[in-house]
Image (cartoon, rainbow, N blue to C red; front, side, top):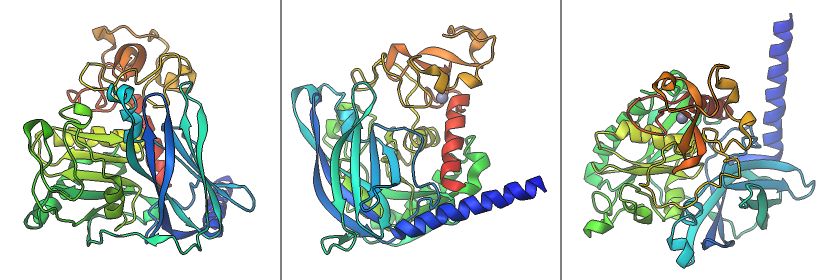
Length: 423
Ligand SMILES: [Zn+2]
């Protein structure tokens, strides 16, 4: 009887949450494009345009985000009641660029977008950014009337969509949309095969493997004029649909695109939660930013590890656990502030991180001693610095590709995020 009551309670809760969605939203997407500009000292947001896209791939029951991840936060309030009706955390390429040396010397602008289910009535959109103390500060507000005739149609890049793997309804699954870059029309068959390989590679790794039925994967069949990627340091420039390029921030393996509008235009062909760009290249590289997008090379011998590592960033908000000097970032983390990433700590607020996963016999911090190599602990070095930032395990897929497993803290964070989308 008790079990039946609990089940009844769960079903009632679900129905109420779905009713909230239907009260505020219709199942299509409102997309707001803006320019994010600035330098290391300051940043500002400037409105670009609002679009309506045909699908909504997100949850209809988890409308507000309680993870607290990301360097930025989108909040949507119903204008009449001032109720918070939707929120999501995210990060961006601009936010990373702000920590490079270039941002000390000049200002630069980046296109960014946020998406939300399409509101039935007027809403107030608020964008906030974390200050140096890690606390969110309001930066930008916009009132949107969904009936405005200035809301343009999305899908400016309309292409057919191929179902790679469909397991559940979009609102009850993690929906990944794969976008091709650098595949010519004659190579779209290879793209389709690369997407099937992508799917098989992602689900090689726990905890994705055992949660495979909570994912849908679709591919947008969009050709580029030329094959391959830009490699500026070798004077290789290709005319591709998304203009992805190695040497982003002058780091050879960092392959990203600044053309965020085209990324969203292409993604809007399918319902999606996460965008993954496959770059048609054998060269080692990629990148992933939380709730922004991931990119990886399609045909490198380490593609499986790159795919799952970058998806760890963009999907679960995982930070890099390595601390060599191979990136272009400076002071990416402030050791006096607890990082928001679930797998990094400055020990400022470790109680709210993976403390519950550590055995009583494990010293904190944990020495880099072989006795602890396969244990969950608190190892110094992570987030691109050797001192003051700590990681959960001696090795992890967010650190090197040697071990082929995620540490306990990363695994837990991934499972929580899967359930956020799929439950
Ligand atoms: Zn980890």
